[in-house]
Image 1: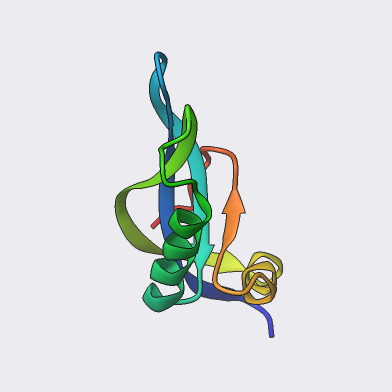
Image 2 (image 1 turned 90 degrees about the horizontal axis):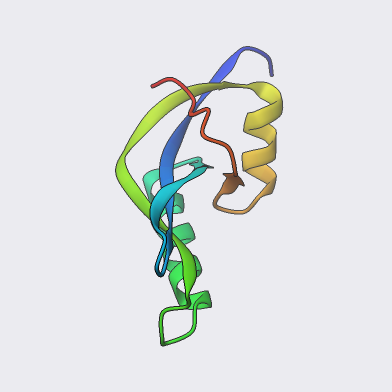
Length: 91
């Protein structure tokens, strides 16, 4: 397997009480189903009362091409792989 592979990109933002909102990286997923399951697992992991600081998905998900190494990381991650930088893959 060589070349490029298609993934779903979901941007995230961080919300912090008294500070506001700022970009918080992105996650990569093999499918729309995986993206939705990843977000559901994330929300289910949070306490019932919103914490002082948390991340949330933002923007419209889009498709992007990634190289084999990144694709393999996403495959091994079981529904999504998170990246805490704001260098979003081009769509």
